Amino acid sequence: MTSRLKHATLTLVAALAFAAPSFAALKVGTAAPDFSAPAYLAGEPFTFQLADALKHGPVVVYFFPAAHTPGCNIEAHLFSQAIDEFKAQGATVIGVTAGNTDELADFSKETEHCGGKFAVAADDGAKIAKQYDATLAIKPSLSDRTSYVIAADGSIAHVYSAMSPQGHVTETLAAVKVLKSASGI
Image (tube, rainbow, N blue to C red; front, side, top):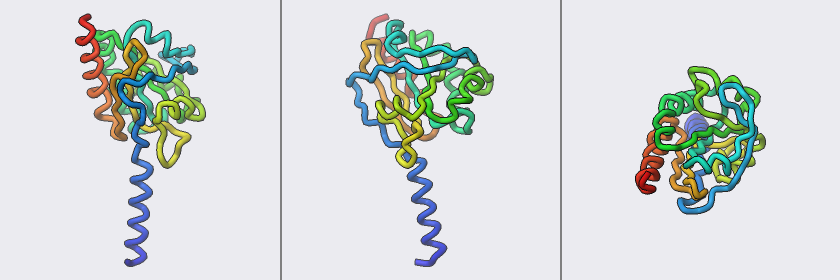
């Protein structure tokens, strides 16, 4: 194997390792780990508490690597565009990240990102992401791109893990709709 080919192969393997999520190990039906975290909604700080949010219905907890990065910007914007559909189903959406947490106040209010429509929480040290088995394989100090739908009873109802930001809204919204129809509301 030539030196160039070896280098190209190693580069590809490294890129795939960084791009590959750790694949969420929490299974549907298991209890979601409870957490509270410093968060922002439209630039305003507050403490997000999962247990309190679950009192109002299902919660979509979506983990993303870092605020103000291309894929995460797209994902936040897609969630902000669909937030009225989530609310119509009685669901709360919260983004959680360990990356660029000092930028979350701005990220939460900027129109091209969250647009002040849903909260984002800081997960310094990726402690919450670790509880949810949602850390990047190559850099466990950051969360990967994994979305959970947590039913009002605190159980995991749906898990979707993919580094592309494109499918997370569709997947979680469909799961929330199934929850609503199953509850007969």
